[in-house]
Image (cartoon, rainbow, N blue to C red; front, side):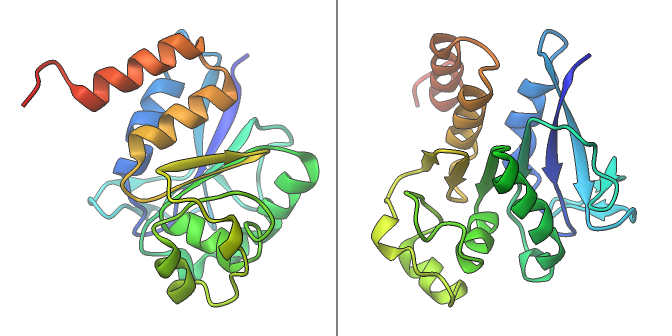
Length: 190
C-alpha cells in the first residue's frame, strides 16, 4: 500500500508550486501517493484556473500520512483553520513543507521563530507576518530544511521539490540531484 502525502490547497493556490512535486510523488514506481486536503469539501480553484475536488477535508484526515505540504497562493489570510493540523504534525513529528505564502503563514503563527528558515524575503515576512519573531533565523536561500519543517520562497518550485524528495527518500540523493539539474538547466543552454 502506498504512503500518503497530503497537499493542502485553498482557493487561489499556486498550482505550479505543486506541479513537479506531485508528478514525482505519484509516479507508478513511487511508494507514495498524493492526496489533496482543503478546509471543506467544496471544489477548490487554483490561480491558474484548475478546479480540484479535495480528497479530504481538515476534519476527515487519515490517521497516518507521511508529510503535510502547504502550497502558496492568495488564500492564506483565510486559512487559519489549518492550524490544528499543523500543530498535530509538529506534535507527531510529521514533516511539513511550506512554500511562498504558506511559509509566511508559518512565520505569522510562530512556527519559524526558533528554527532556520526562508520565505519570500525577510522584508516580506516583516510586512505580511506582523507576529513573526524569527528574524535571526532567516536565511537568504531558495529552500531551507530544518528538522521537520521545509520552507521555500515562491520562486523555488524546483528546489522545494528537491528538498521534499530528499526528506521522503523517494529515490537516491544522486538521482534527485540529477533530476534537479535536468529540470533546472534543460536539454539546451540558452
